[in-house]
Image: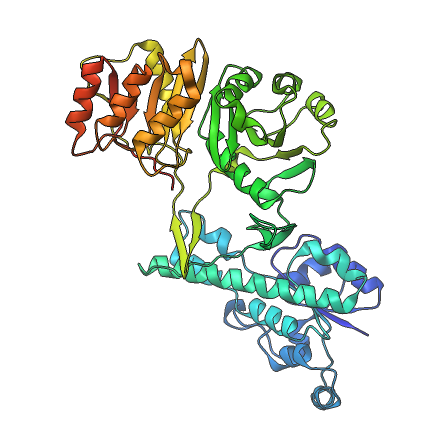
Length: 504
């Protein structure tokens, strides 16, 4: 008769699983609260203390840490191991279902004390899982109730056991990492960076066909970027980079906004009372680059949005949702990828970038921080009401553009839109000229946002020559007085924000 040991903090699916095991002729052993839950459901498992001959000790800190338990799990199918068990009167344990004390949930509460946290450090459960996972050739280790159904009748038992062993070790690794990070914080020490990511999406190749690539998620079984691909071809490496850039950008805006991204940098941004009204202006910012782009919207996409998109070829559309009319209209574009994404997904805790020999870690740039200084008019002329509206929009629109970011924008009633975007060049004045080239005649009467200060007055002079009427920039250069003098000489209004938004 095969034997299962059950010791579960999370009782989800436990009774059904135990009943399924019992119906297949399994003997059940359970500890503590797990045994009580099964008895309440009419099942009668053997208690761990019946196997060990020892009662629980130290207020439940010691229950399963006993040779009768661990030898039964770790025994191999060799004659010597089986004889050693029989000499002690013990039988083998063939399945271990354990989930651990909720340490992460407890320490995430602001009011949690160190004493409470320490009591949630599971010792016996981790030892059980590791022992079962080590002996995966014979024993099944289960740490997730979502695997119970398959465990009752696995299609390929050896492969299932190997898969569950890998999952168990990943689970205990993450658990130990959470404990280490918490105790390091309590001691005022820097915690080691622990990154766990699960391969969920094999990609055809990376940036180029000769490069291999895979998408990893921080959540097991998660979708791309935490979302759901609704239609279209599989996402590529470059699609995911562009989608990430587009979603970061559109999440900065509260108003209905559309962002067009090409090669990870926005080339068109527009806000309007309704998302469909922003489509045309966002594309018009750089219609050449919009071909083959990724488009993101921070509102649900409807049929009016699709109509405004026209026949423009885009690689991907990303939005919080797509209504039935939009899905029906977009279904005709079978290669178009539709990605439904949670808006909250753009607000991430940390950003990681790889460099040779290590990683860079930083908090994400989610816009001006709460303690940012008030904006300051530094020129003789202040912006008029329409310019103020356009400057506030342009300041948000320039932040996700690659530095040296320069954005030209206009306000037409309630619709705000970029008319020229320049970025990613070694000097700022070239970016002003690039934005002006893309804007053409629309630069006349526009406003300009720059992600960092102008180190020389030439950038301001180039903007004035384009017909720009107002500038918003961080300030902070040693030559700020020269930039201000150039703006005054041209009759421009200029605002200093005191905040920089470089994006390398």
